[in-house]
Length: 337
Ligand code: SAH
Ligand code: AVI
Image (cartoon, rainbow, N blue to C red; front, side, top):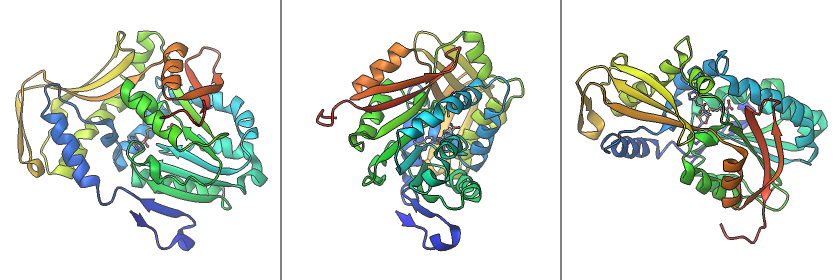
């Protein structure tokens, strides 16, 4: 882990848990993914500087309803959420542009803000530092500790001595499969004490047309986001994917209640991934699975929450139930995780 030595100059402290391990991890993940029968690349590799910027563009697209809907829920729920939090650490996992957090900070007001330490956690160093710098421009007195880390592997590096409100906006939990999401929630539960809350966003099941439009936008921004993952591999692993030879494919898999994103080859090709000593032979029509975006019902979400040893304290939603923000607490601190 590296710690920024000059927090007095930057106005915030920054810890980086990925600096030493990123290369090893991306090599292992991409080798596993691209040599398996059903090829995949883990979706956390979307988010280099460019990918984070494109994701931000996605959030403003007319077809991409989750951001707008979550913000509308938050507008009504923020005061109530913050009334239950009497100060301590607000930890935001996968914080990205950390715009949504402002609604909670505003609801806390200046006196509440003075008793809060905001801890954004993200794999993307550039997204995290850029967003924090913007945030401290708005809240100059807010104490901020930025953590560059993987929320799957590094939950235990999160400070654990103060009361906590853990926040996971965007429906990012839907980018984890069933098993991963339960094990992730259990690990979050492992750092929660009685009274601590986890607030997280869930995208709900809705008509196929609306889901598919959100991931096949008319401006091609999601396609650009999807293809960018190949540029990340090219740069990080000295590879030569031609991203223009891949089609963006996104569809709702009703049986598995998830949108799937894939990259599909337009012709036969051979790709060199030099840092892995790997030559990848792909045929026209082959696909690489890049993301799952699970969609929930109250029932499937409730099952996931209880299997993780957590209990719903409050369910916030919009009038059409397109999206949900769920406040959960620990069932019983003695339940083994
Ligand atoms: N919370 C924001 C951003 C969602 S995009 C919103 O609601 O708009 C998902 C964010 O999670 C990105 O910023 C990405 O860099 C981060 N992320 C993805 N996988 C991650 C992981 N395993 N560990 C930490 N951050 C991750
Ligand atoms: C970050 N996550 C919740 C987004 C989603 O909708 O699953 C990522 C995304 N992928 C394509 N568009 C948006």
